Amino acid sequence: MLRFLRSATRRRNRQDGGVASGRDVRVTAGGWLYHGDWSARCAFGRGGMRRDKREGDGATPVGRFPLGTAYFRSDRLAPPPTALALAAIDPGLGWCDDPHDKAYNRPVRLPHPARHERMWRDDRLYDLLVVIGYNRNPVVPDAGSAIFLHVAKPNYASTEGCVALELADLQALLRRCRPGDCIQIESQ
Image 1 (tube, one colour):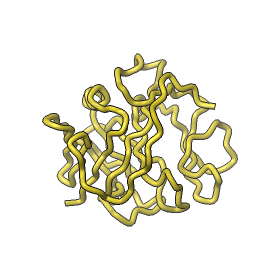
Image 2 (tube, rainbow, N blue to C red):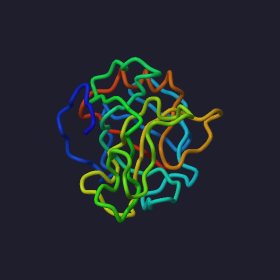
Image 3 (tube, rainbow, N blue to C red):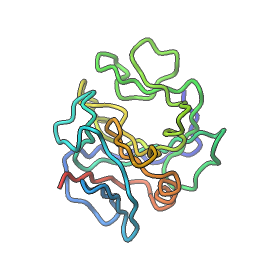
Image 4 (cartoon, one colour):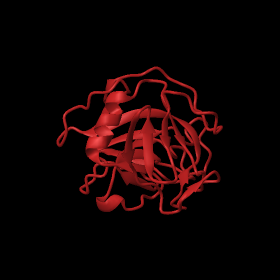
């Protein structure tokens, strides 16, 4: 079971590409993320941005999705100030990316018998992350999994489908976010 430090109200998944609100985080195909009058450079998937995202295509899904739980490495960072739900990453935390498993696109405890990714990483990309509510409610097998806002690689190298920011920018964004905020990922 995940150790939650703070809980947030449950909110309905929005995958309809609806109109962005004033509280939405916006990601553009030009590699910028906006939240109100604040902006930061970002990276996105090596497969570009797609409305028809599939597991393993490296694409960032286009649409409007809720911001979920923020996770952090407590051995490397203090709990970040945020109003979002917050949980610590420990060595036993994983995320299932096997579309044939009942835990697909959900956090799992390790060891887990199905294909998964480890959340406790040496490369620091997951020192701080926020779950993007893509393919979460309901979960559709093979539609894509483990889509996060996370720490960027050097030079903003492409991701496997996530949106990535410098650590300081991700921390600043988390201070601004509130429960109910969504992320609008735009392909144009």
